Amino acid sequence: MNALIISVGINGGELTREDTPYLPLSPAEITDSVEQAWKAGASVAHIHVRDQHGAPSTDVSIYREVVDRIRKRCDIVINLSTDMRHHDDVEFGVLQLDPELASFPGGSVNYNDGVLLATAPVLRRLASGMLASGVTPELEIFHDGMIGMCQELGEEGLLPEPAYYQFCLGLPGGAPAEPRTLLHLLEMIPNESPWSVVGLGSAGVPMAMMAIMLGGHVRVGLEDQIEYLPGELATSNAQLVARVVRIANECGRAIATPQDARRILHLTG
Image 1 (cartoon, one colour):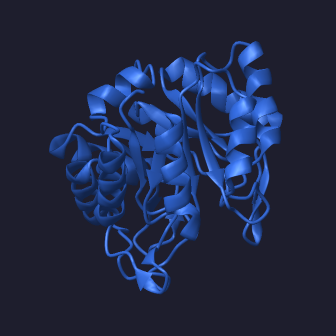
Image 2 (image 1 turned 45 degrees about the horizontal axis):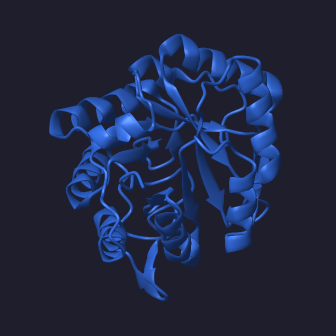
């Protein structure tokens, strides 16, 4: 098996300090959290940013500050969000910052009380922008219909092959975080495609263990799991990463460095 890539979802675009006081929001806090997660064993950091009031933001200047800070501190692979949940006219300005990865939703899905609205024309525009910028898409898959959409775009030459799939399981409105769900999704993608899985909430550890055993990769982090144990808040992203490292070590699976991740995911940015 390839070494295990551990991605860390630093803060997401939904949570607030009312959900957990440990959520990093400012550029300095995000950078510190990324560096700590990198030291704990993460090789990829998936990043959203917030404005001065803690609200979700697509402000490129805030993203630029975060990216510049991180690149001065560590060599982790930067994966920026192209979040479509909070804005009607997304410009995908983060592609200007040359991230090695950026999120690419495979389609639309209900998201809490709202919707992640990713129509085919918008996805074609995003895919074309990624091709022009040399940014590798992380295909976020919330249900199996999204795989078909991504494969259609791949046939049109808009998405690279082999594609990198990130299965996001357990979202209400999406596919459940169950072993049979993951196995079904894996049957739908090419054998040579690298893949990762994140289980939301308490499904984080079971999904991570399946990925470790099946040769996939793992995402954890406060974006996806604010509790370390039932009723006990996780105190940092590094704490969640360190647990996956311990489990992988017990299973004999090596941990990928950022350079390993770049090779495994065919990153060219």
